[in-house]
Amino acid sequence: MKMNNRFIYGILSIVLAAVIAFIAIPAVTSRTSSTCEIVRMKTAVTRGTLIATEDLELVEVGGFNLPESVARKIKDVAGTYAAADLYPGDYLLPEKVSSVPLSSDLSLNEIPDGMVAISITTQTLATGLSDKLQGGDIIRLYHYDDNNVLEPVSDIPELRFVKVLSVSDSKGLDVDYTTPPEENEERQQTATITVLATPEQAMLLTRYENEGILHVALISRGNEKLSKELLERQSEILSTLYGDGMELSDEDLESSMTVGQTGSGEDSSQESSAAGSGTSTDTTQDAAPEDTSGDE
Image 1 (tube, rainbow, N blue to C red):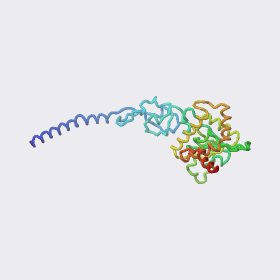
Image 2: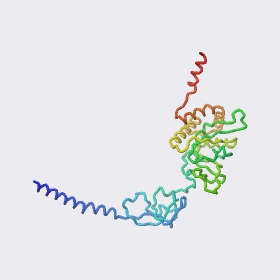
Image 3: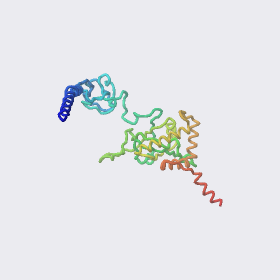
Image 4: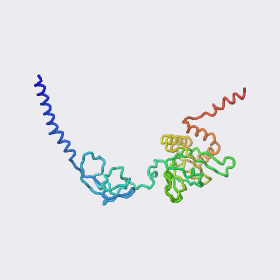
């Protein structure tokens, strides 16, 4: 009985070895040894540069583990723009090239449909948050008008939560306040702030900047979840004021400015409380007990 079991185990081992030797190994060897032609960079190209035919070459490489999306024909890549710095020997994948020219400012390449980028001037050091703003910040804008004696400062419902795209100096160069200036290097000063806005917000920004002074207050930085929530809240405010898909008329603009000047105090305090705690406050309920106790 023992001999029969050993005999069976021996036969199975021989069969398994034959399968590995004559089927599995040849299949793996065939797959790893197969080659194909792909496009590869022949020269170095910086981001945003047009890729020419002479910058490319066709090479034969092993097909094992090769991405399916790698470029295989020069004509598919020549005439596109480098989406990143490319170096000799780099394979070309779709995310490394762009069919349209790239701006030097990455934030301007990803403006959502229906939105615009618009710049506002920082007229003093204080109005620009003392040169401390960064791209990605969520800010609130206040308007100061010295011609309005009763309410010179107004909170603007349409501009409570606005995303900063970039900060520039007086020459239009991007300012990076995340790193301190090197020794003997003059610190750049904020001259303009570029923000992401709807057409309605852009009209208000243009008007307010030319009718007074805009002051910037920082609401959120480095908190993507909170930033998304605040921008969604701003979108809801705009929908309430103007409706979905409606363009801003002159009457709407005048009405909005009136609301911003007369009802800003209560709205601002409620919005600030909501931003801090994530809940709204009912001021009427808070005041009721005080009125009742007074009557007693």
